[in-house]
View (tube, rainbow, N blue to C red):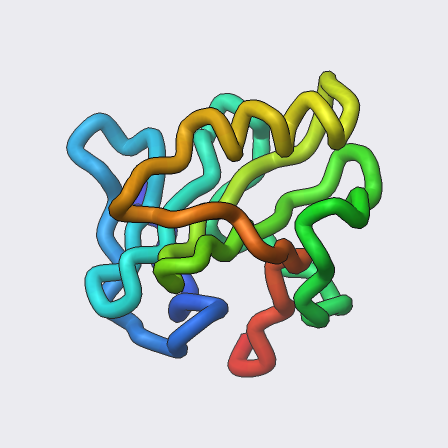
Length: 115
């Protein structure tokens, strides 16, 4: 079976994308964006048309693959489902540290125009 080719990073455009050792996540070696967990049914290659960054307190559509941006510039990809947005943001804020800073915004994962 042929391995799936990973799309460029939706944030910095880098093609230096690698899967983690257990193949659960993909990570950009250039800007450190990572996600989503393959158990969600979504992959690094999933993209959406709306690419605007939204305030962290404005909820995305239920069942969306989104990116969270932190004060440090680190971005994390996650799948929003199963809980309220208030619950999700509370957990995101609780997991922050001096390395990431606070979450400031989110966006839908943009479509890759080079498909």
